[in-house]
Length: 480
Image (tube, rainbow, N blue to C red; front, side, top):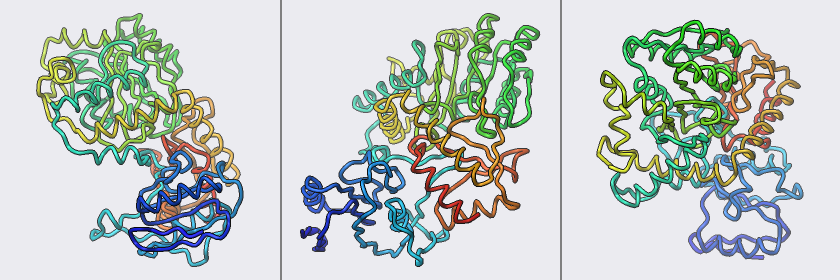
């Protein structure tokens, strides 16, 4: 069978049934039409690695241009070589995914230089603590035409984003919105709006982001009270409950998923004790939202924040936040102005509410992308998404332990999307650099006291798939 590309004039001769046609440059529409007709006759996956999508069925290709093993029926493939830039690595990764060994002539990814532009940036599999890889529909949303932040078409999308955020936070009432800034902006927004000088805040500190909460509390003029655990350990709810009864704080700060350590903190009993005492509960969900269960209303949480670049699988730049009725009442009863004009919810809320009063120009393209990312989350279903993250985590645990890696965190409080491991090598940084340079895989190092001794492996959003874990494990087996 001949397939002709009407743009380039190129002719493809197909003489046997393929499982995959892999191209590293974009297909023209005419060629796609021919290939769609061909796919009706044979099992075929047609991959456009430049645009990172499967031309025929995007759900059969992960975001990094690698094939999903479970959709392939044999190890045969037809590989279309038309990469003008001569980078063989991505093609060989595709061959590995369908059962072919890599070529001995595989080239490494180029070193990044200041002269590189968007067309020559290396492709990375982002398996660190964030950002994570982004699906093509989300990237496409970023490229939508620019419209104004008060345009009715944009405001309709903004309303939909707010409703979808309430759904993923599982927040039955109150206000949900995307703050312009990363997850730390969401942390600061929650604390500066809910604390005034002289207030007290009980903070659970078992890593870098609990420490960051303490720092912001101090900058608010409030008094932090610390309940601490070593990095890698969770805090027993009984310790927090005893501290609530002893100190009677105005606010409780908890990190649901501590990104610096990979620890999951139990929330519900602490939040219920705080509610009974009259304290507000602020919850850090930067790494956990849409990767594991978050129940804002059921757990008696009053304010929560997250980040777009982790399990939401959206570019960094927005911090989804939610404020419940008690938190909104506290803001209404403030005695002093919020210390940050930019993050003052009494001002921002007038734009996100019915009044549409100008505060600052919304990051329009990022909100388009968040809308697309939330659509993917809800189409998949939260429970199915949580299960996918758990399955990828379990597959990683099994594979890494076979290679001699040890996990820092005990199983009962391990995060599924952020895995902190101790590598079986003397120079962990050198091995991470080799994974990045030779395999295009980014792994995060340790933070704070754990710097230089651990890796942080993220399986977030689109990357929480066993086939992605398999790529990492294969690369490690070749290097250890």
